[in-house]
Image (cartoon, rainbow over all chains, first blue to last red; front, side):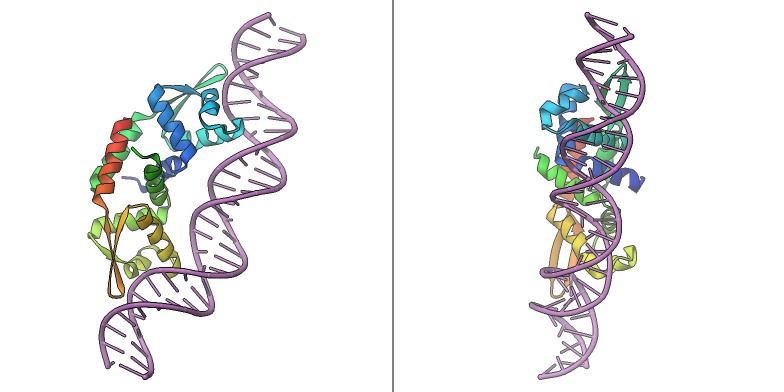
Length: 89
Length: 89
DNA sequence: TCAATACATCGAAATATTTCGATGTATTAT
DNA sequence: ATAATACATCGAAATATTTCGATGTATTGA
């Protein structure tokens, strides 16, 4: 268990906009950045900022092909977090 | 699933000091506030602040008897968080 | 090549968080 | 009653985060 990994992931999803982005990507399976503006009414630079935090924390997987970024959930990280909290219960 | 509950709990453990407090309480089973100062080298008001955030988020259970506060992990919340991330994986 | 699209980055403003010293309050021991 | 202990609260300073408009970069279509 690496506490800094947990803290960073927790920080990533502690913002309501970032959590909403995560949940939407889970729901849809995948997402490009442009989709997020309709979900959150955030400006494009703000979306870019939040996505970067989620990606840097390992919560989302970033895959740029051409000029679009496909975002998907990092299921391994979700499993890791689930197991972490399981261990605390 | 209430996103605000998740966001608040995630925020509570996103700080390295608060995560360290949580892990120490898990390890020891219980903890009074005074114990935390030796763990983190934080000032007493800072500890009080961080503990309040953890308690308000439902991560820790607060039980004051006399002048000491016993802190324990809220295992129900840990289970809830585990299940939440399980659902995202 | 030129224009449009999809994001990224920058600098600055607004806001929130963390931390402290000082002080307050309730409880316990003497 | 007095003093000590265990926390809580307050106001302020330092720092971090969020957000924006402006601009930059890479890619695609006409």
